[in-house]
Length: 281
Image (cartoon, rainbow, N blue to C red; front, side, top):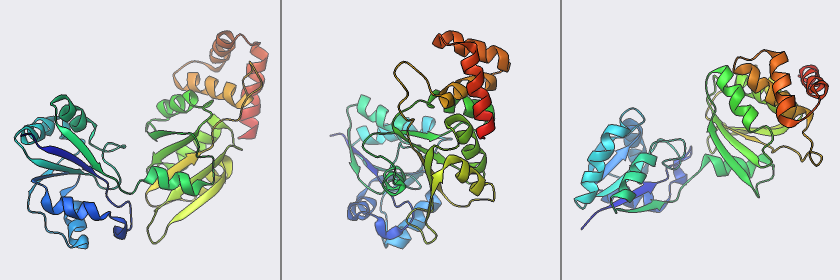
């Protein structure tokens, strides 16, 4: 008989948010694969649970090599519990490789639903949540980040991003440049913790606020692009497309010509959009 892989959501801040089933699974699992074994130890102590199974580290640096070992345990009948530092496994955390390998091996995969920074931030953002897209962490390099933002500048759905505190100021500034300074957004930090804060406002204002320094775990929610006139692109969208090409190494004049040609627009219209975005920033 094959085993079962259990993906368990863990608290994103307040330990009291741990679902009751998490305690049961922690105590009963034959193997616990944890992103950080030290954090797992602190969590089990806070919950008053004593795991009886084998505890293994399973993080970005070793998940490719450790996945076959865990699949072998599963095919041998083990109940394997996968937990990450916070939230659900696989969502910008380790887990995808193991889930894919387990499914391929015919292993049953189930989940213990738990707290989610994505859904919590969406609910608190005061932005439309009927349709949304999760973008995770943006690239660290400025050029790559600009290209990634240019690709979603026209996205009509609300967007959710993760970001580190030491990069949030430059990320918000890049978002303001790519999406326009007036695009509505919310910066959610330290969710469910003592110093929880949700800062809402236009991207330009949020970028200025973050320049003074922001601490804690951060989730950013950004409103989708407003609908453009039929067959037309907004000035912010045109400027973002040019910025993406510039970040890739093209000269501004070449980038403007390329965007104009691609969209069958006058070069002057694209140029004016770039100038307007520069003045708005």
